[in-house]
Every structure is written in structure tokens, then in C-alpha cells.
Length: 133
Image (cartoon, rainbow, N blue to C red; front, side, top):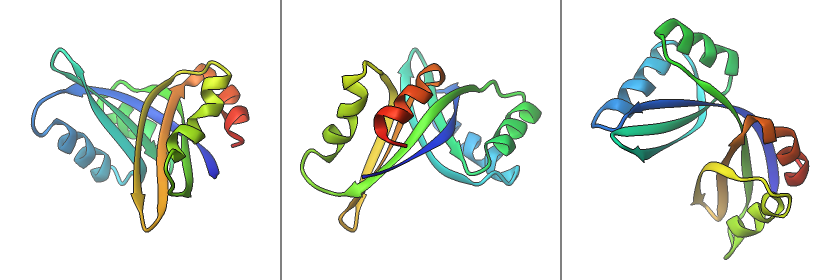
């Protein structure tokens, strides 16, 4: 398992058709290159988007220029060989030290899994230590 710590920016959007596309188009028009994102319905007509940009400062500048409020978080990209229980095994280290994930997303391609795990910014260093990032 390989783990890389990244900066993640959390953005709240309306939970309606086109909101995520509009946000991603705005980010792209500012020439911000993303390495990952995860988006979820948060209920009450709101959605949460977790953006990991290759250049976190460019993402912050884009948000500021667009008047978009962002909340920083700590993210981890976890990669490894796909097998039954891979995600559970990867997340055990966070559970063992009492760190709660606030978002996550994973996929498998060509026998390898890649997972984004997001934790509160205050837990970033402890999560990095637990995951071996």
C-alpha cells in the first residue's frame, strides 16, 4: 500500500443538476488541475465537494476570486493491489487511533485500487503518521 498526503478543499454546493459541473468548469477555467475530487449529497438541498488540486494554492486563489468559501482538510490518496478487504485494511490504521474520516471514494482499475480518504485538517498529521504517509 502506498499513501500520499494531499491538501483537500471542501466546498458546499447546491444539490441540483449542473452544480457540480459548474464548479468543476469554473475550476478548469482558472486552469486548476485536479488530481481527485469526491462529491456527495449532504441533504437539505446541499452537496459537499472535496477537491484535491495538484497546486493547492491555485485552488485557493480560484476560490477566492470566485467568492467560493472553502474549508481546508487533509486528504490521502491510498493505492495498492486490489484484493478483498483492501479498503477495510487500509482504513484500520485510522480506526485504531480514533480518527474519523469525513469523506472517501475509491475505485479499481487494472487490478489496482485507488482511494481518497479525507479527514479533518486538525487530524492530518496524526492520520499521516497512522497511514504511513
